[in-house]
Image (cartoon, rainbow, N blue to C red; front, side):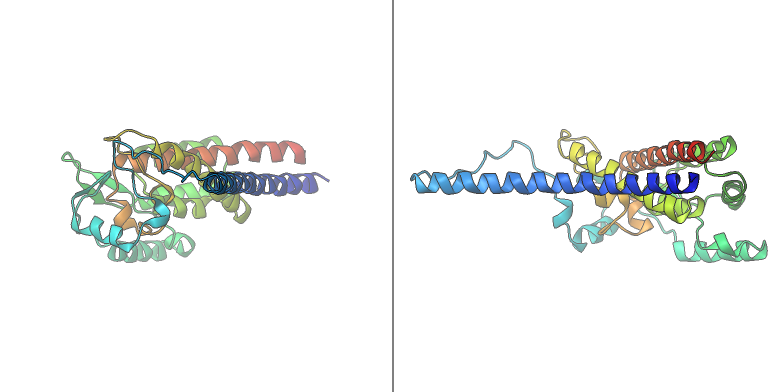
Length: 266
């Protein structure tokens, strides 16, 4: 009976997330239809619809309209608009090969492909792509498997990872694969995306000069056109920090839900 209740809670949470997005989409569609009706009525009355006044500041590019040229510019320029980028000669493929070899030597093939490579900045603020210590990753996964995601020691390790390393979204996704069950991974992704969607709306309204201005889902979740870790490492540190904080909050939601599920199963 406890397992059925726990599973029902998980499915209800996922249904609620889906329902929230449906309501948001329906509200947006209703707004568009209402504006179309107003424009049609104005035209019928001989009044031509007018465009809203142009803002005094340039609007950030819409994430839906970005193309691959944006990604190419990140490679070529040190700074571009609101997104700070830094040149680096780091070769992630070579580093991953070395980590896999190290994992294989220590009989940890299951985590060899999941080791993250966070951004480390020197005194001049230049980004250097360095890997998380192998022993830290191994310790994190082992304790999650032995004691669960909600154990105090695992939470301490997560604090170390999320607050001592400048993780880009690419590595956050890998860490979530490392520590979450399939069901937890689905729920984490949903919580993280919902939080990023809300933050993206707020970022559109930020003033000029704010490094978070215009940072949307592509930057906060590492999606096209900045889906590679090399490009994400060149984003402004404030964007990486916001992404990391939102991901950590999503993990905290999992911990709360996990405690509730354990309570219901007793």
